Length: 113
Image (cartoon, rainbow, N blue to C red; front, side):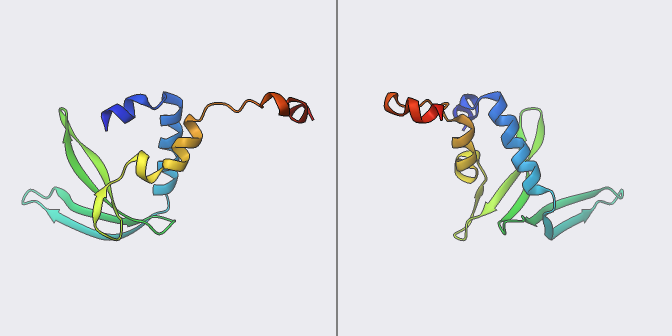
């Protein structure tokens, strides 16, 4: 996975982050599992959301480096898996990283029109 992330240009990653942000805004919380500690701190074991497009996702924590990061898991209909740009935003990724279009020599005249 790190190889894929390292190969995505920074501008494309920023645009993908915008898509993710838009997908999560307006999501509906469907499940929560709050835990209140004896000192009154509130934790969540699970937060599940339904995105605008109908996909179900779960927010969870995962150790990454010095501190935990939040990760998204998606319900595929056959089970849960970690969300990834390659699988869940493949069309957007392809569009953002596609080589610029250049007309073929026989279509140069058409391209000028």
